[in-house]
Image (cartoon, rainbow, N blue to C red; front, side, top):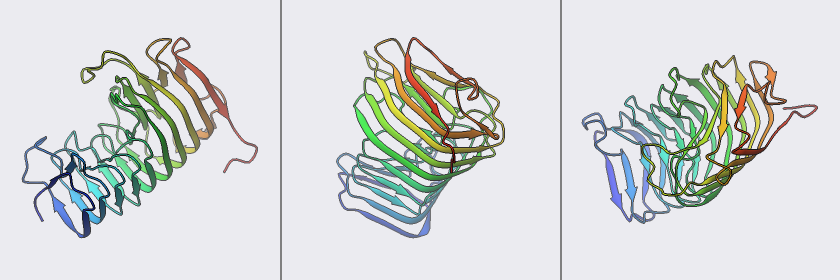
Length: 276
């Protein structure tokens, strides 16, 4: 079927497959393929295949479930999923040319997904100018089968933030993630002013755990963690059992990590005796 699904203040809506929804007849950036805005909540999207979105694939509200959905797009700006608070994304396939999963709203869980990231955007975007405080993110059991990054843009990393908003983004767990065919960069976490940021004050990022992360093959670009200033920092970051091209991350040198000492703090590395 060709078309889009657009709703406002939709509560309890069910969009169920099996079937294909294509946005091929819509101009680039003319709107999201599934856009449920306003006070939309408690939405279930399950079993459908979404192709050729003109912009984001799915935008929905609080307590939403996106399950067993396949997304395939080619334009820039074809971000995958942006949900409201306390939402679940599971057993999905993403082939996106912008951020696959936007980890912006508190209480979001992402699990058992497969991602093919095209040249633009990050598989996991931690923040792009969020102004509200958000916390409690869980991302587990993910296979990233390809990342096509090849140009030096700030959103070109598997785990990324370009945080120019006033919000405090905290409490992220990334666990049991396998990555292959990704030769660019694993980590790029920054707090910075940018062309899309309109906040007069800057925010913070804290309490991130990257555990049991395996990258098959080398990555060419250094990893980066950089806050904005001494009051707007990125801190309390743990890399536990992270291995890239057979090398365990035991310190900043083995991780090829550039961390700004003036704007970051408490960045730790741990390798257990018998890592899984």
